[in-house]
Image (cartoon, rainbow, N blue to C red; front, side):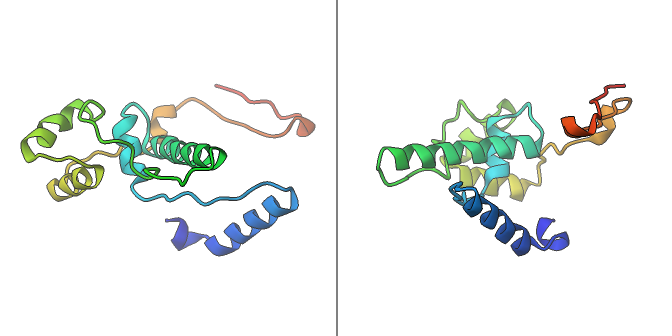
Length: 143
């Protein structure tokens, strides 16, 4: 949806420019299957939060490989282990002989089963969030 509503390239160019001005290293992380793998590894989190965990894992591994002066490998896909897969999908993994994240993703897509849990705003009825900087003197309130 970001590509449809925002001028993505302008945002990205501005981000890179600001990083360069402040001497912050900019590195893109491959986002392929991040939502899916994140949701499988962090079943208690919402989709967007689980995806951010997965992207953080990839960025961490990339940084670790660069610091150790090793070529980054196996960053996109974590090791596929049946123990990581949530209980509701374990039977499908064993019966179909699935041995990688991509095949699990394709099987779930084909079965049209829901694996994503998007953020539900109606769960936060009665809570009001007001955020601002210390200079503006606005306080965070929970109603």
